[in-house]
Length: 453
Ligand code: PFF
Image (cartoon, rainbow, N blue to C red; front, side, top):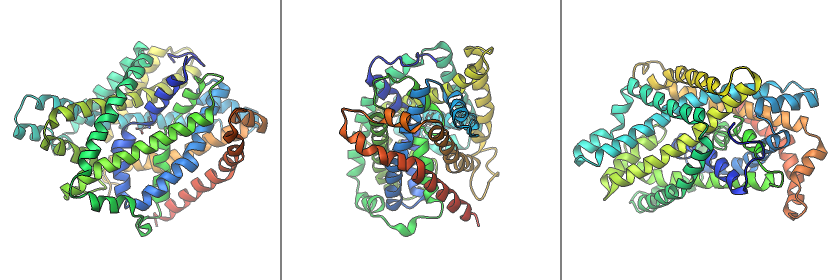
């Protein structure tokens, strides 16, 4: 890794990177259609509750695992398994496998962002008619090879950044762009909230109709919490390993979870009024954001330039998250296969990701006919990874940490003498890690299995 263990000079550095990894396509692209799939308000309530009650405590645990061991996820879970004499050493290995597969399809979606970014740029120089044909999603969806090319370009960019070892600088630089992104999102939020569809949207998003929840909703909420907080991948373990001794992990974990959840809420409030206005867009479509935003942006005054700035920022956020994903794979590769060398490990990982990206990239064109349970390949892959696999891996990492860390170590790492709140929260945190999180993840899993019948 580029940074040295405990190398961040300021606490701010940690926040920039951890929030940068958490906030990405998951918030803007994935969350809206998952909310659409699960019927709106009731799911949002369930999601926010899970993010703060389960996600934040588990994020604290992963950061602490990294900070206490100063190792990446595979070695850290191995150490924990040895200490507790349990079989959780495979947790880290599963996390790394999951990470490379997720990186490959994250690259396909990042490729979509790259496409709209370049199309908005070209549209600056053309009239409305040809601009709207360029920013048309159907053209991209019908062209699998274009999607594969764009995904390859994204993987190449990520690999080059990591090979050159400039990711730390780049990630910081990207983080400095994020206030601009926040400003654009707020402008868009205000604009879209003044559309006539707003009352309907407010009812949909904030009036909880619990009958809309399905047997799978709990796991959809949990899976998305883990995905968006980058839990179960090893990224947060790595970031924890760079924290300074004096940094207070619970405060950091809670803040990251809070900011990330707020951003997801802003994203749905920004996208749904436009989607409701368009009326013909299925809210459950994974392409929802790409379907509604470009068309809307082109229709407003100065929208092309705005759209370009928006997609540049979104691409930077996607790149930031991708660097985090690739870093996990490479650092674990190097940690366990010492003779391979970082550069070669990075190129190999990029190549594997590229091969894995073929299926999702072609899923809406050449492989359109391949459907699993009525869903396209990319939707099925997303669901399999995020709703089924990710909660289990996140739970395995949690258990490895819980069993391999003594009561005393947990207490010392959690409680800060100067923060009264840390005394009172400690027993709750332990209770959640020991009972609530495993029980809820188990329940979500059982309900999801039952929903198959
Ligand atoms: N949390 C990111 C998002 O919401 O887009 C996705 C992600 C990035 C997951 C990095 C895992 C990771 F290591």
